[in-house]
Image: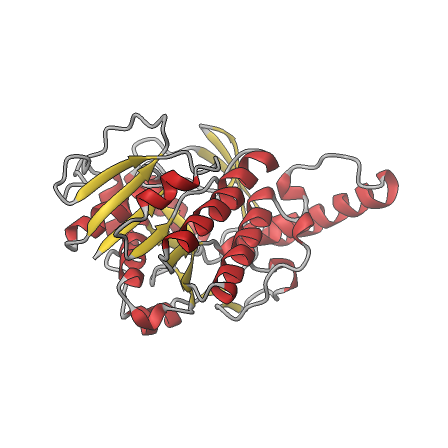
Length: 337
């Protein structure tokens, strides 16, 4: 079986390519034309590197890249930048890829979405997020990433309906690993050495990058996954305090932090947001943590389930939190094939 992997040089993409090669797949890895990364698996006999600018209307190049491919793993995307940047990376790229897949007759797709698509403001504290939880109904109150991932899912579902695409949508939680340990679920970054932590006891929807990569590759070869939307998180999900304390023990230099109680922060954000709406017609540009819909999406105390993913994919996260953090802080070559 041959896989085409977009975003192969990105964080999740690198590990997904390595996992696919370990499993014996032939891999055609798509990277940017300007990419100069010296990736550990570049010279593997089962790998073909293809340089394509997926944002451009290079239909012929994409169609050529899809020749002989059985499954597309669409991982390419942007998590940062303004609306134009993320729209181009998350929406335009997906549209271009799907057009080429239709022309090529390659209809099997595993696409990486995000937990950001859920409607956190309308989900009650303490509830469990599952694949059936409500999707955001007011995208404009959310950040650009959530908006563009919602658009991406709509495009993919249209491809599934109109062209009988054999689609699996995977929604990972926050993917962590080497170089990506302190993240937006811990708190708000003030500087490299100082963070504001919001809340302490909320469960964090984390998935270790190697666990996530294994789920992606497993989905590619699982017929039961066709037509499914699956949440991908680890088993042993820590609270914010447990995660931060474990990091502090393992990392030689952890940032300094102060913690703000969740209830206090929620009331503060709601009050400031309302004042902005009522007195200033919403014209004041507020930090993300002072916009209720965005604050709830990052720090609301909820629970998370990977039950459906385990049942459908027959997948179980291999690495526990402690083992994953130890691997992330070690000198081991995690991408060796």
